[in-house]
Figure 1 (cartoon, helix red, strand yellow):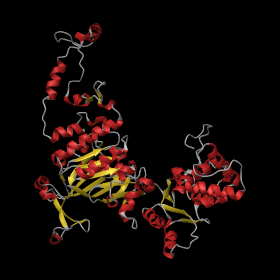
Figure 2 (figure 1 turned 180 degrees about the vertical axis):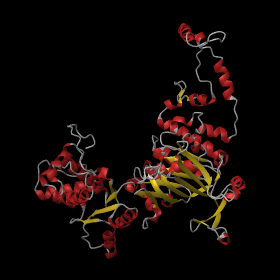
Figure 3 (figure 1 turned 90 degrees about the vertical axis):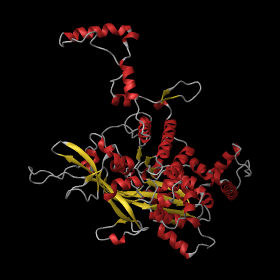
Figure 4 (figure 1 turned 90 degrees about the horizontal axis):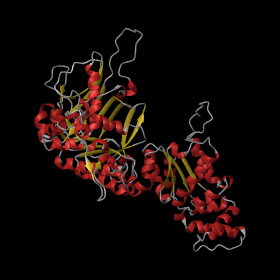
Length: 601
């Protein structure tokens, strides 16, 4: 079973959203854009346990915490409740769901990505049109009971009374196999026996009806703690005597007793803990005491168990699987979700996870005025899948998650220009640091690639800035020049044949010589011949160009910029970056009346 559409109204930070899905989906976007909210919405409409909590919602689950309509001039008028509506459309229904929910089934036009409406029965022909099931969770404030409520219904309820919907029972929801794994919150209870934990899900999926609770309670009730802690008994008897002054205690024997639990099933579920031993010299310890990475790996093991139990129905929503796990485990988790589950919804900031999802399966989210929209990365035309995968680990993912991209044509600029930007920020505290502004540097690996990456980033809604060498050989075609101009808001072709030429022309010769002499003294110059005495200026420049051009990977231009006085930095670079800084001004200063330093400055 798969979700093809999710519609949301008035839930948390989302006033309105309608998103379409095509199988496995990676959700990316800036912080607070709504990635976690989408997962929470899926849990409300599909999860079997969420709406059964008390209360299932609170004030801040409503958009802007508004659960009642604004007051009118009539102060006595009753304010209407504002509803949360979350609707999911599902296809590829299992035989069991089709049998139990057949009267609520509708039809989904796969090509046109819409529901068939009344009077379109003749259009319900496979393979373009397939059966679907719509569920809607409605949340509201119940004025009479002074409580927040949430209930899930079949959106299509032909057998319900006029104006009403048929409620979806919890056993039906369990058939959907939806699991939501929240960031850092899953491990703390994954291996407990609390209701809804992964271990509890496994037991219920296997149909286990254990006598664990009755036997455990019976043994705990018979455990005589006082027999092993005689020093406590006098205190308890003293408490009894004092209580007997106010309360009649007629039970035979001692009226007070200590137990290790409240002796209820629910309390045992919360207190019973999974222990494990991780090495030969270590005794068993509660699993939360293991490292975070170990906990998350254990969670992955449980996920595989669940998926193997119900391979045709498991739908996962998983937040940031990269938390506290190494890259190879991140890739394994992503690969597992893609190959072993019916459908997975994943949020991530990790290039090792992002690279596993095809561009057509990656949704870049944006939010404007509470309206959340999504765009497939594949819709950013001009970038092939192999380019996407190749560059995903080398800055592409970082740029996609930001607000703007500075695209350069080589690794030298990629290392050196951020150093200049940082030096400018240190020199002028009024500048907003580029990384805080969401501006990232990206190496396009050659000027010929810059138009397509400019188009890619621009289509995704990023601001784009280009910095590249002079076309002194006149090889650039008119259409390439036009593409650069069209896809970059700031489009700078500097006046030098290469970045090394720019450096040696604009950094003072005295600084170049100091840099070269430092290389020689530290024996880092390799095959670059550096004389003991300073030669003529032209020779210093020639040696510096050979050094910088032959050791791009070493980041020597960046190192040179670190050693420069601020006024020695190349003007062409600082002028370009100044134009970028100007587009991202710092927010107004905070006047708190104190003299404490700003920790975030």
